[in-house]
Image (cartoon, rainbow, N blue to C red; front, side):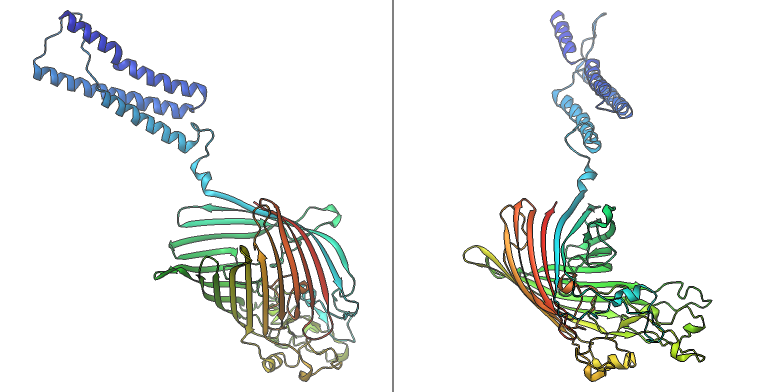
Length: 568
């Protein structure tokens, strides 16, 4: 009996339940006092630990009592202490359960692992890029000095085409005075969020001298005033299947294209569905496709603003569909091809119903048809059918707006070949051809009723006719790039050369590259350039472009761009 009592006391001193509970309580209280645990979280854990310990002790007492009864154990004498035995396995299980719950909450809230961030922050990614550019523009002295800035007219109150009442020349573009070493900058920063495995969102801000859709470049100077920041992207996407992505909002161009048709800075508004899936029979061949529904412009709800009767709603659309495939021929060769159809709906100009501006009419019925944004090159028509004042018809002011004379339904073919030359140097060949299937000269003149105002031959008479008209509906580009197309690591480099030809009505002039011929259509010429990375994601670029008109008055522009770029 004495030896049994000593053994029981020894086991009690080692595994006494209150002592274990006291150790856990001390641990949690220590975490609270050190600030590792907040008071409310610590008290909740403390209560949980005490409750679990009491439950375990109760279960152990019942087990010990049942064991003692079945074994007909000796009754303790006065002063003896009965201590239930807790196996090592049970003790380990209790400790691990509590530890697991504490560490799970600590990891989720970020207070027990100071070098780790909460889980939700790991689903957010920031990205951006910066560019500083020196740009020089050189104009030929033989250029015509009568290139009209129709975009400026449409942004204002129109231009009076009546030579008897007009105040002077319309807005004219600079065509002869060089502009050297203009410093310009571009800054873009955005974030993307993985809301779930299937749903993502993104927002991006960008610089820009104005709200142009094709350039986020900001010209420096301006009296050192602060620069503008614009909402460049805002989108949500969902992936119901591995092969399908649905995106809505304002997002990066989802179509495979070149800057012959769409500027690299262009973002689209609307909805896009993108398909991408390898062939089951050949994993080296991947099929892709895109469908886009893009609202280009909504007419004003209040047009005309000072009229009791409002005009019906008009919406300009871009509906696009594209299908293509990429093929990994072998380790050295890859091919990609894409065919797209773009239908620009309701973008062409329309002659208004007769409007009596001289009698106080605020607007004409088709003022909404002028483009929201344009560069230059497209054939234009007068939009207003202005009534003459019967009391003074010769001196009636005729302020005109101008719209696109052609319709635009584009067939776009893109081809790319990536290969290796001279051992390990990458060579990329790009080709792009665009045909405006809706281009029709006779239809343009019928639609304008003689109101076509540009794209006549340089030697056309003062009052030109349809026979003097010069335009076309084709465009193409060829480009070769040797080296890394996108420098990323220190020492990466590339050189490139290309040629473009864009006839006046091959595409809407508002959406392509704003540097080549200073944007727009009716342009042809070559360009060369190169890049060299001096550090990770940091590189210099130089580019030279020499362009001239396809038809019409002489208009030659050379441009040199020197850039310092970085992305993160």
